[in-house]
Structures are given as structure tokens and as C-alpha cells.
Length: 141
Ligand code: ZNH
Image (tube, rainbow, N blue to C red):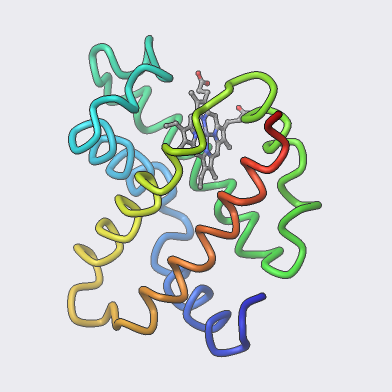
């Protein structure tokens, strides 16, 4: 699915986030809730007050899962199987929300990396995150 070059872009950018999953994740969620307020309905308790501790802890869990995906780029389906069950059967997040999160993710990366975030890196991240979203939404019925 990802070429060796694309894989390199994913690994390189992930090095920036690794170890800082909580702050990056909190920033991502805050951006998502601000730009797309409709996404807040899934996070009732968490988004009502935008409590920083909750943003950090959920952000950390979310980005830790992305980190697992980085380690298993060629085997996303198996690596994220439990998470796919959770999103499809328990959380029932409308799949239309995933592109919104993916867009916000790229804006977070661009705002930190600035000119270092090349068009090629952005394309690789878009493809990688879309691959995750496909796995997390394919069990819906
Ligand atoms: Zn999600 C949860 C990941 C997307 C919503 N998530 C979750 C978790 C994780 C995740 C890891 C935790 C789990 C446990 O704890 O077990 N997500 C994720 C990822 C992605 C996602 C990786 C992509 C990329 N989500 C999403 C979206 C949404 C969501 C788009 C909407 C909007 N999630 C969610 C919720 C939850 C989760 C609501 C639950 C929270 C709580 O805890 O409460």
C-alpha cells in the first residue's frame, strides 16, 4: 500500500510526535472540536467543558493508536482490529467524521513542521491516515 519512500515520510514525521502523544493529541482534538463542532457529540462528557486533562488523556490514547499503526503500516487490519470493532459496534462514529480528523491532523503537522512538511510528506500522511480510517470504518453494517 505505501511505497518505501512514503513509509520513510511517515517514520520521519512520527519521530517528531513519538513521546509527545498527549500534547499533539490534545491539540488535534481541540482543533477538530473547534473547526467541526458537530464532531463533539461523540465526546459528550469530554467536549462539554474542553477539559484539558480529558483532552490530553484521550489525545494520548488516540495518537498512541496511530503510533501502533506506524509500527504496522503493512498490516493495519490486524493491528487495529480491536479498535475497528470499538468504532463500528460500540462508538458508532459516522465514517464521515474520519476525513475531518485526517484534515485536522495534517494541519497540526504542518503548523509544527512549517516548511519541513513537504507536499510529498503531506500526500504520504494523507494516504496513511486514510488507510487507518478505512480499517476503522470497514466493519460497519
Ligand atoms: Zn476514536 C476512542 C483511536 C477516529 C471518536 N479512538 C478511541 C480510542 C482510540 C481511538 C485508541 C480509545 C480506545 C480505548 O480506550 O480502548 N479514533 C482513533 C483513531 C482514529 C479515530 C486512531 C482515526 C485516525 N474516533 C475517531 C473519530 C471520532 C472518534 C473520527 C469521532 C469524531 N474515539 C471516539 C470516541 C471514543 C474513541 C467518542 C471514546 C472516547 C471515550 O473514552 O469516551
